[in-house]
Amino acid sequence: MIPLRDTEPSHTFPAVTIGIIGLNVLAFLYQLSLDRYELNWFIAQYGVIPTRFQWADVASSVFLHGGWWHLIGNMWFLWIYGDNVEDLLGHAKYLFFYLACGTAATLVHVAFNFDSRVPTIGASGAIAGVMGAYLIKFPRSKILTLVPVFVFVTTMEVPAFLILAYWFVIQFFSGIGSVGHSHLSQGGVAWFAHIGGFLAGIGLIFLLTKRDRYLRRPYSRW
Image 1 (cartoon, rainbow, N blue to C red):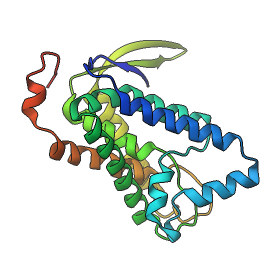
Image 2 (cartoon, rainbow, N blue to C red; image 1 turned 90 degrees about the horizontal axis):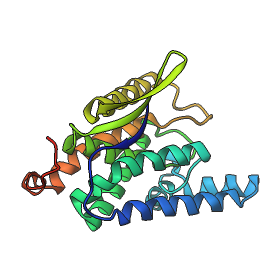
Image 3 (cartoon, helix red, strand yellow; image 1 turned 45 degrees about the vertical axis):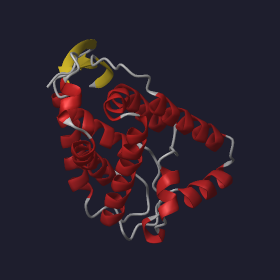
Image 4 (cartoon, rainbow, N blue to C red; image 1 turned 90 degrees about the vertical axis):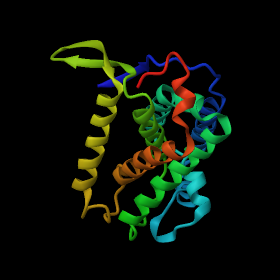
């Protein structure tokens, strides 16, 4: 299932979401300008390496990506879910929320891969936090989703809580399945970063919002 867009309207311009997408695209275009040796050095320098953990790398790693599909997938999910969470929190608080979720995701990944020398990059953990917040605040919103049916492809509106809960279950069991293999030298998907970011988003959205604010809006769905 591929989400295309949500049905939850937003009444403010998602300046921070667009800014984050822009920064990620610019960072990736810079990566493309590097040759292979320079790129490997750049990723090792600014990605998070658990055995050489540095706080500065946490901030830089969430704006780097490993390829076009990595970038497009992450930015697509951020565009679908981010505008409503930004509308809910306000611009400044949303930026803090996004970076906090990215930090939590990174710390969880490091905790489960403390002996790894493989650099970790990507915005997936932070975006997972946005998705966790969306699940809590907009569970009855509909997500227009591309669904393959045998040899055909169709679209249908799926409740947000179903599609996001399904996504989390996949991350959870994939993470459990990766235990014991995360120390290997090859790269892969940072499943526990997704899990950590998602749970951080759920916790933070309760701390940073007041339910009454959105209840007064006529388009809110609970």
